[in-house]
Image (tube, rainbow, N blue to C red):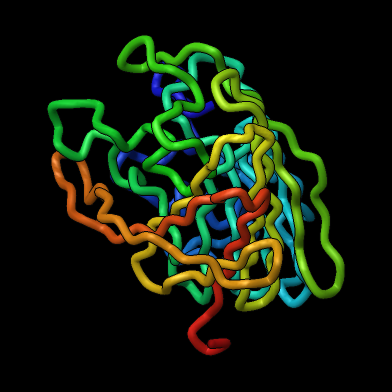
Length: 275
């Protein structure tokens, strides 16, 4: 997964026709297609790669929390109403280029409250690979200055981090998952994600005794931070970089908290209607 050396055709439409891409994306994320496509279509080639070519696969009651897991691409989706958490966690089959294990995108009411800084392009300045492939540019827990996987080339990293899913499920009130990544440089990290309508709660912990940080790119709503004793943790604001496309970049606020002896750091994202 996650490698330009293995290109996968997800549709048979012409290059500039995005209908098939929108159709696959809406099926994977279990959302209504915004391109006017018919979600009942099953003739889009890309659906089979995600196991969604079965007509029953895309039919999910949005009123009940749900989960979808695509282990072959290291993607896990937790949903409740219009709230989504997309978690990156898995094992690599071929040449990882990004340090994005345990990265999480948060969407509430159609807004991306915590994006991937490299969504548009991982080379926003055009002349370099840039920092957007590093763990510090993802919404992932990490030890400052320590890589998930050391870079040994422009598109090659050594000592691959291994991700695994410890728990993934749902009930009538929430969708939940527990994800773990093992690194050679900084031990194990665990991220637990709980999704309810209008709210996403995330808990991070690490096995390494060194303080770790959890940071989030936040273009819309500032998340609340809670320590394991229930008190609200102090956060530090930084300015990060978000890609706007190939050769384009602009500043974006980041909010970070360091564990500082607390083994667990918790974050909570809420819709504006809930706050």
